[in-house]
Amino acid sequence: MTPSRRQFLSLPALAAGQTAAGHTTKIVCVGGHPDDPESGCGGTLARYAALGASVTIVYLTRGEAGIPRKSHDEAAAIRSAECEAACRILGAKPVFAGQIDGATVVDSNAAESLRKLIFAEDPDVLFTQWPIDAHLDHQAAATLAFRVWLAARGRFELYYYEVDLGAQTMGFHPTDYVDVSGVRDRKKAALFAHKSQDGERIYRDFHQAMESYRGREAGCGAAEGFVHLARVHSGTKLPGLGA
Image 1 (cartoon, rainbow, N blue to C red):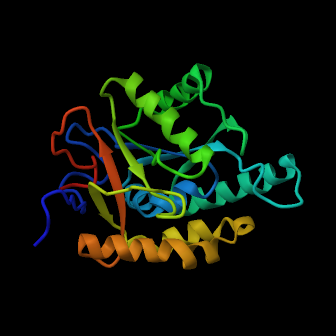
Image 2 (image 1 turned 120 degrees about the horizontal axis):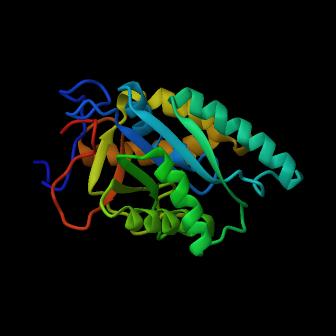
């Protein structure tokens, strides 16, 4: 028997990627580094894009500290190109928030800067990383996105995603699931585009198991899990993917 807390997201009865009013569904995903959004919710983003939604990935940093023996400028150039390749595969637009890998800042100026970026996209749904995470940059992405959600005063929904359950993401218990069985290859291709990070090994060692585990929880082959943060529980589903 399926617990009532599980939300399954399927093809919409409405026009692909649109709400009842004909408004194109707009999705924004915030991640601390290149490959975080792809790892945590690349399948969900691919599903949205396939349905005709507008999908934007905001990378808080360009992964400047992520390639050994490369300068920050060299690493940023390599990893930015990898982001662009991954986004082409997913059907998303990359945006860079201008912070520095390993030296992210959480203050009022950083929150305002991210607010402007996200508000310019006018999303229906905002995805971001889970705040209880071992990596400071992941924490920064989560906290800043949360501040933007507060400033939005109900203009969009906020969902948290996981990136490395147990090793980095801790205490994560999904409220919602997305079946990504049909887009698993696209998600893998997007993650593999991050060649400097050995995306194939990362997927094999971590994310393949996570997808399968969440899939078993949700009753499908592969799933991504999310925690929906709501001011008042309304039983809403992720807009544009149906009920």
